[in-house]
Image 1 (cartoon, rainbow, N blue to C red):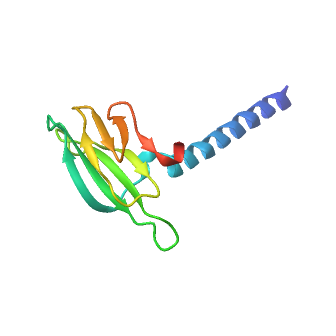
Image 2 (cartoon, one colour):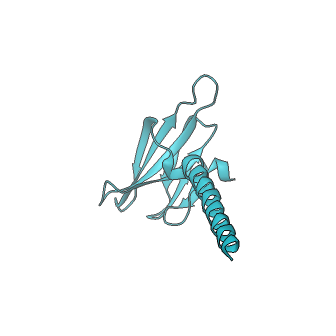
Image 3 (cartoon, helix red, strand yellow):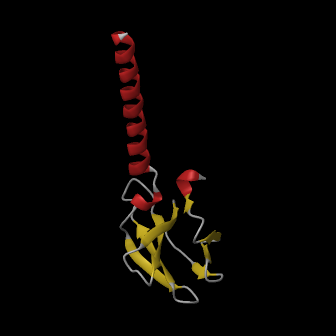
Length: 122
């Protein structure tokens, strides 16, 4: 009886450990909102001025190509920012608002409330 309880506890702890490792790896390496920095390139406000898109060039260094990151800024709450676009290899950006909630970034159309583009998840 005691051995069954110990085996169950070990299985639960092992599951929690494996889950935690996978969650940590995803958060650190594959979550688009963990990407930051870069050289500021351009800013475009939405037609109703509720939002702004800010584009940044992320220098890949000597061994990698550059990439583009675009963040969505909520103008009513400037501290609320989320990345909606990350593409590699890329070193320039064209952005335009199609309406108050849809944008086109380098030929890719996104609804800012529902979609993001991350080249790693194509």
